[in-house]
Length: 577
Image 1 (cartoon, rainbow, N blue to C red):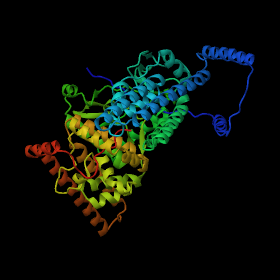
Image 2: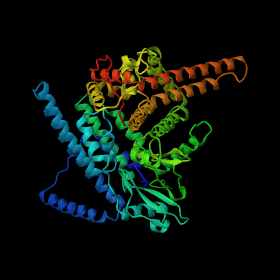
Image 3: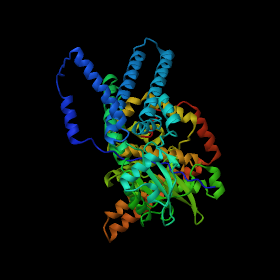
Image 4: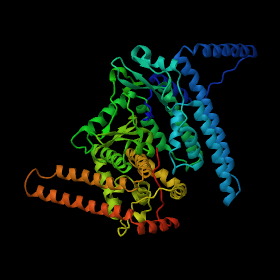
């Protein structure tokens, strides 16, 4: 029986009023606080009035969004500060310890465990943006201590808040003008899925169309600015106390992307562009990629009504076999879809984890269904072509070209580390032209631990790198990791590299032909050179595929992977942001 998996993503916040921001800045700018004195009777009287006021606000806040916000934001701020102080004191004590060697590592690991548990409880208490932040941390395998990553991943990725029907109805009525039961012929009160920022309900309109209605959790847009400001303050304080702690790049990404994710009309625009791209003549996947139809007349910034699509999880191998879908063909379709987004369209769905990818059979072939279009990155032609040329150089193992294009991405003299972040291979292996398999990565627990160890050893350099590279690259690193994971789960460990090679070559070829003469000998020469380049890539990729499935090569690769990685350049990966 088919399953409908609607795992969502969320959208964007409102701002504090300009007057409020001005007043807050003025207050914070005072050089000396005013000292106010009270007599004891006055103090008792003010305390009584204050207590009565708090009780009154608490009672009335159930009916007032503004008062609820006024109550919740200070409460969340107090929780944030308490958590931050406890963690800072714990780390100060741990780092000042005189323990050495293995004992010191054990103590530091225990400190990480305590810090991760405190942060987890803070995410549970505050919810919303904090849940989203915790989920991000759960995907930063190679950038944060493993204790934090595993704690967040094991407790937050599948545990999200569920809004009551009363709260859902209130938002729908406020945004669309009536309750769900009146707008739709049928509206299921219990959601079929919930994420950190929204949940999805099944509905049916009066024309008989089955719909999926995505409704944002209450209060997120209103509190998001304050939450982001608090996170910024805590990261700034942490960097001041621990100079090597520099995760400003993560805060910058949250600032940029969260407001967009909290705006469902922005998500609708992303979905429409995606549908148009794959329907265009440039795409080789016309009819093979489906984006659910959006019903704008029943959508708002906090409510998104779309076509309900049934399909199988792309990682459910038993279900794929049951409906007759070939995992290898599905893997190729997924890789082609996302490499076209990156190298041809420059409009990239940046959250391609398995929950956002469904598949169904159409005309005997797999049709990919793309869900959750909240997190996109649009990249300009200059960056798109530079990125394509970098990947082409990586595939050829051309050290000079790799350095040139990596420096164009602000990698500077850290380009070997930058290359390792992109490929999950050490620099020496990437530029080993005598090894056609140098771009092959075998996903295993041993490989993951090795990557984690190198990444933690060079965490400061990685963090520095992530602050200097172009912002679009951060989400592309995440996209690469998600696609690599799906590719390997489907048993096709070479597919992504092979298809990346073809698409980046195609993008470069289109650009060269576009700037070639319209007619004459020069254009013919350009076309011939492009054809030779394409053939060169195809030969190299065919050799890679052949060696990847040759038993003798497989045994040699296994022996190599059992040996310690002594590459001069650190092995790292960009992780997920």
